Length: 128
Image (tube, rainbow, N blue to C red; front, side):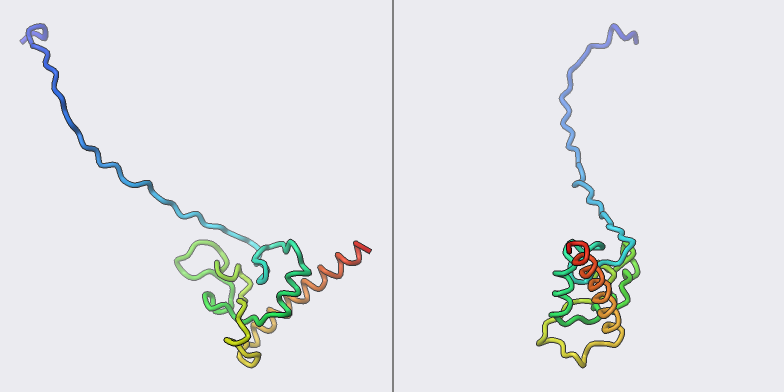
């Protein structure tokens, strides 16, 4: 049948589209340097404040990474999200006695204190 003989008809069609909810993507923050346990930054903005905080509060192994600082299996990133790779977490004096702190945590804690002490003394020497 020729196209000119076909009557044009207007048809209203109602189509219900199912549009999925927006896809949420996970953004992983990958840090290549272990962070300070006090401020959780890779470069302490105020080393003196971090040093004070580290010396006045009890610190022990991070519960999430058991003190090694590495991210768990199946997670994104390189270092533990909770401790920033430092392997240390702050505890309250009531929940943790000094005899409960592991030797490994004591060594890591001492290393952070030593690093910050050098930064603070360098800053004082420059200011003087």
